[in-house]
Figure 1 (cartoon, rainbow, N blue to C red):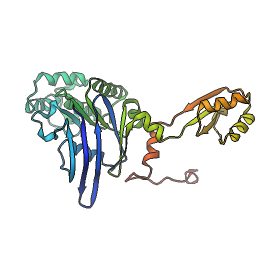
Figure 2: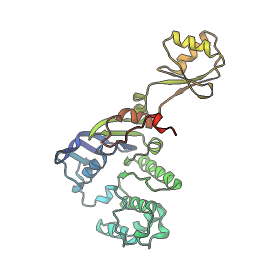
Figure 3: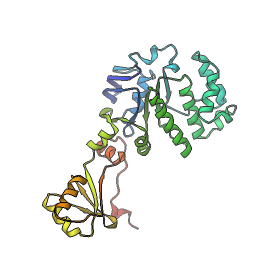
Figure 4: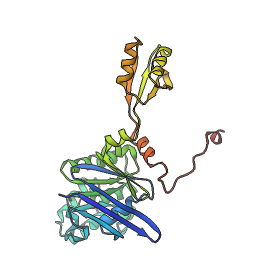
Length: 311
């Protein structure tokens, strides 16, 4: 089994505790989104898993072993932490060839991953001329070089165009469907919502959530219903009698929080109130995430009052 296992993991830098007694498992067969505000400890945790930093206490293992214990690590773990890490004077081909040779991988893998990531046409071009998106694809190519059982990506969609974003989304899903372990850190909520099956959320170096995407949204957003009718006064009275306070919205649509479409439908039918629209609404991942991490951000700009924004 190639699970990433974090147990009581702690990392301090002087008086700063970047990671605080983290315990969670990233399992194979699904895409796990790794979320948290800036300074939450995500990058530090990934560095600890990859042996780039040493923990103050606790353990971080892959398949029960520390990353530093693998003799051919690229066959076990593919990682993208910094797309700028490749030496600018090398060509894309030579950068990947050096990684392949040092890990005992066949040279043919270089051409294969260049094709897979869509940068074969610039294989002999020096990396310093690459755009951010091209560097990102090169970093992903390096992560795929050993056909690894575990994939760890930090902001993989950064700099990619729309086609590239769809490509990386499908790549992660395919890797997970093959039974591999996929951990992806991102600040793009829409992309995480479209890709991840499971979420691990950090705040202030601590674990805030470890659960499926659907469970996370359900827990951190109250049920609400969108409803539209031509007999609003009658429906409002029915809802008020049941303890609900509807809120007016655009296009004569109203929102009722703390209930379900089924309950509203039953109440309306009982009183003979015709409904033109009735729909259960769920909060977006972004809304649920912000509700959970409110106050956990190490860096946040002040929110200006609306009056201050008026011209």
